[in-house]
Image (tube, rainbow over all chains, first blue to last red; front, side, top):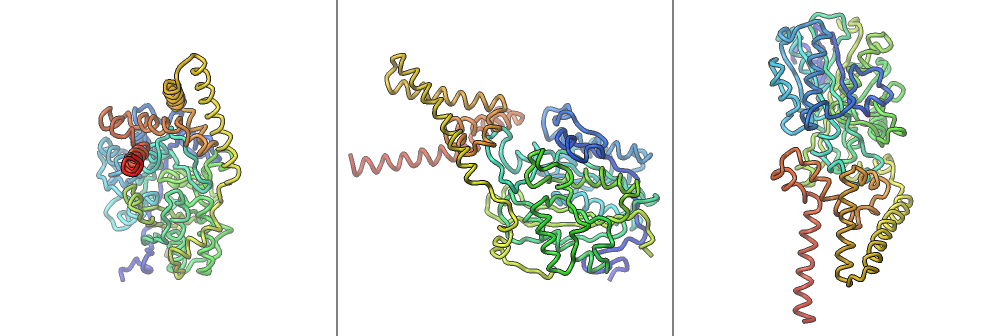
Length: 342
Length: 148
């Protein structure tokens, strides 16, 4: 087995890269939520001065990248790769932003798991010696996602109580070989898991088994216990998915509840903001990671976290054809210090 | 993960985890909202009757007015808010039909008048029209054969 591999899914980075800067930009609704103070920029208008939601989403992603690079003290020309992905067909938010950014670009698709996927690939590129500085970014937009996956906005339909609300937001991280942390120390790459859920409104239940599978693989292959982490945080399982994940992991012998939360629950106040089960979308985990989690790690309030972004790999076509929802979850361990890495 | 569940077992299991819609409350809301919309329709119908129009004209005036109201409220961005509480109460009446045509037309304006508004306008109402018209043709043929 390759020397840096710990098992079937987990790798240990020999020279853990640092997240040297992070930037978030969110929509007005997210800016009214409980994490508002942690976001770098809150839009007043979700069109962001553009004439379509798709353009607005792409602009958010582009601005997140530009500002993250600025915060890191680097220039655009110092960036070796841009790793990006989003929810729109053919990942246009990312590639249209890359058209302007002119940074070598690798487009990724992992649905809402893209933040962890891009950080995983970026860390491996840096640890492998193929890059010094990389930007990882993803975005989602409530209105562009709704029209692609669900109903026109003005249509008078009721959302079921377990439905989730797509986050309008983008988050970018700059990874560097040289930095003082927080470090990405371990990566557990998920497998595609499908327990047969077909209801596109019930994403939490569809993705929870994938999250449980990846968390269980991570803990098993690293030999760590859930208590090792200050926080185990999933991307967008929301209230329903969180409970299922706790249950499924209990069956595996892991009791994660005391240290476990979900970005989809953290980003909105479900009762006040009428978001039902919670937030979802690539921008959900991206903005919580690069906003709240990154800043709390810098302050020292969080030292070791396991970040698991979860993605539902369906398309509108597969849903119309009656297919169930395959899901994936990728985990990365982020630590303020690297004593744990020999 | 060691846990393996069949799709059926998992579906059974998540039933206990998923919050259920409040059916009784939803029914009452739909009943009230749907009833109010019908009241408005009846009002329009009575008023036009009092102007001396025949039954055919009254039906046409009422349907046109209600479609206009539905479309207008959709354009103002209010119908979706009504729908959030009223559910089927605002979907089933003809105002809901207007909403289902106007909302995609608004949504897809950005894609142009041909491939956007024109092509997507009947995204939701299209199937209703296809099967509504097909059913009426079948009933018409049956009526011609057996009752004609």
